Length: 142
Image (cartoon, rainbow, N blue to C red; front, side, top):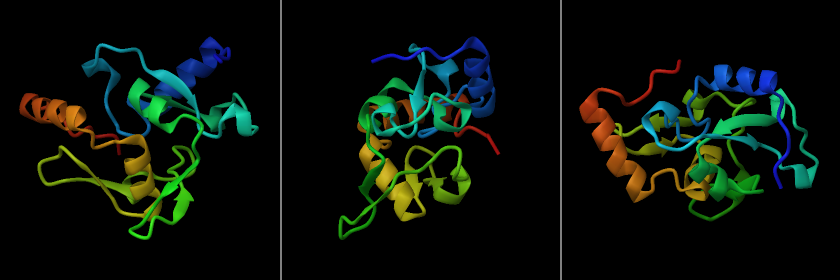
């Protein structure tokens, strides 16, 4: 179910995430879809519609995340909390492969997030290759 997010809150979230998906770092400007305001802690689990609990997400990451807050974070498939875009620093958890087409999880949380949200899906790797060739990737959001 959709919930109302005020124009001011949408503006703040877009500015904070610089119009990029908070998870896979895809820039909205290079896609043909409108990004979504995702509840990090789902409303079904008591998550608020607040700046601290909302992030900008591409529709695919949002769909795969759904209401999940945990995923398998290591080879033993132990459950770990997913990356939290407001509490966790992206660069502490993720890095790019040498060719900048795949995300590498540096922590169990990042590995669980990459797996759960399918952040290295074939289609996204293909389009990242094009963006690299265009000089548009990886994003510099530090």
